[in-house]
Length: 214
Ligand code: FES
Image 1 (tube, rainbow, N blue to C red):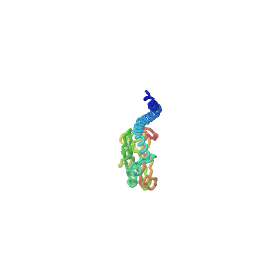
Image 2 (cartoon, rainbow, N blue to C red; image 1 turned 90 degrees about the horizontal axis):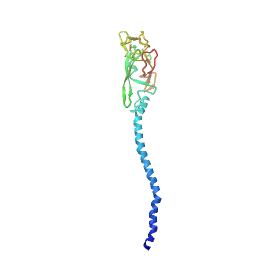
Image 3 (cartoon, helix red, strand yellow; image 1 turned 180 degrees about the vertical axis):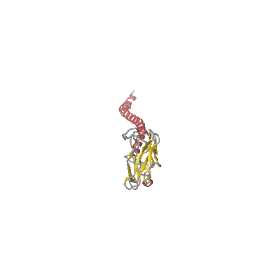
Image 4 (tube, rainbow, N blue to C red; image 1 turned 135 degrees about the horizontal axis):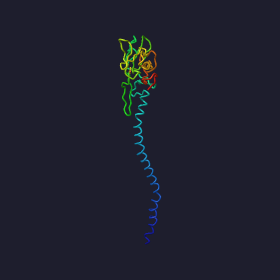
């Protein structure tokens, strides 16, 4: 029986040690579990958030003329778009030139780069300034043509007619053709003598006497 007495302190130490270490282990386990839970929730949430925001971010980038290829953007923050023709392409005798306007289109999840979004009529007389009209008829939205033989603009849908300065010449259209702001530039920078033609391309409400941006 005396052989058990020396072991008593050992038993005591064996039983006491877990009683001291359990709270620390438990705390570490809780911390680890909490960290793991955070990662499991936070990482997918962040990734899915970026996934959903991505079109918005791309849209903002495109709207500000964002370019990923290092070239001068074709659109600036004010909405001016560089046309694919230069000043020299516009006839000096005042004959209108039809030019397609390209821009990036974005739907919910897709971006279509540099696709046609409309067209403009450009005119200049001699060394005078270039003027631009949206080719959409202000009556009901057909496309206005230039009739060379009569030297005027004409819409075949309901016979709206316009002079070369865009003024309506009959009572069918509710207003004149929609003039657009033009900016002459060099490498995207304002330059009255530049050859790049930038147009603030906008569409307007039809069938109204007021020119209201859509
Ligand atoms: S849409 Fe042009 S005349 Fe009617």
